[in-house]
Image (cartoon, rainbow, N blue to C red; front, side, top):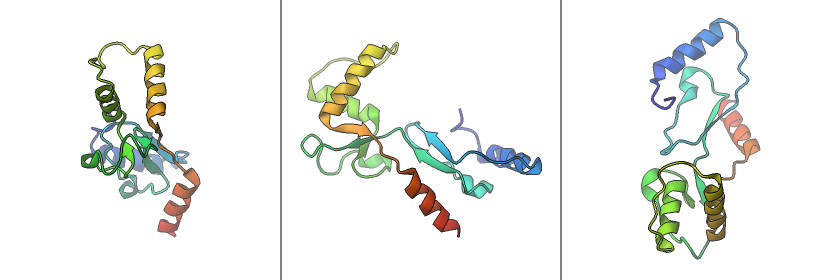
Length: 139
């Protein structure tokens, strides 16, 4: 529901925190939602918070997926949403399964191992670079 909350709700929360002299201890909002919709926290007066999409996989394989793929979702090149990666892997293996129902941890681990074998990995986030680049923008 947090992605659907209108901007004025964020503005109200941050304004109330400022009125009460509350110290902001948050530096990052780690967002796994798909698709990623940026929350512009800077316009609410909190430029020290960075909203980061983490619901992405990085593609390291140069043989499995090459060239431009998944270009309609406005994320960085060589990245793909996990649901798209899962569909591609299942199609490649000619698996006729769906991914609905209960989450079975053993099956999730098997799928992750398959993803690693195909050259997928979690998105790499360099927090030092993010902090420095954001800091320079505001100085």
